[in-house]
Amino acid sequence: MQRAKFIVPNAFTSINFLLGVASICCSAGLFGIKDPVFIGAQLIIYCTLLDKLDGFAARAFNASSDFGAQFDSLADLIAFGVAPAFMLMFAYKNFAAEWFDSHHVAIFAGSAVYMVCAAMRLAKYNALDSDSYPDYFSGMPSTFAGVANAIFMVLLCKYKFFNSCQELFYIPLVTLVLTGILMISPLFLAKLKKRKSRIVNIFQVINIVIAYVAGFAMIIPEYLMALVLIYFIIGFGYGIINRGSIISDQGNKSVAKAED
Image (cartoon, rainbow, N blue to C red; front, side, top):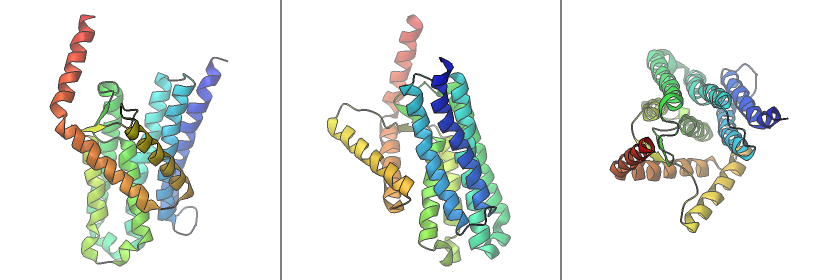
């Protein structure tokens, strides 16, 4: 009975892992469905929503474990490290075949940078700083990077981006590489968590609920992209402005812990 409590969070992680694999297969056109890249991007968004649910379930059932943490990281590597890169490569191949043929080296190199950064990010998080900064992420979480690229791709498909001027085709690739670099950057990103301000907490809850409804229903991707950009700007901006105090506070906590 003691082990049964681990079933729910690990089930969410398993689904997350399988959806990541499904996203890769879908983007590659293996399922023979219409708009495979669009659906592949949507599956990454589903992975993001489920990834947050497995953490919630682990806390609710008091079922956190080292196994669960490692399993979650492996699922995240597929869903938010590998799947977004394959999504982008197949988007170029499907929607801009000639451009893909003449730029396939740059596309593969950019995708490789992103995947390696995601793997390094997850390894670093597990090995070094998963608990170092309880109120901040050190670097962009792989979940955030993956969903940002997925929502961006949904919008690119929706507004027929690949029918536009070829000089703009570098934008999705550059975005992928930048989010990859941000994952291993030393920048701090404020976490979404309960704050002292009731207004801030209500704002967070309302937007989280709307994001889950919009994400699962596959509607208003513009709203989801706006949330990502707002969180990106405010979260990283706050981390940059308060970088000195964040490091100082962590240093003081480490000293106090050592003295205890």
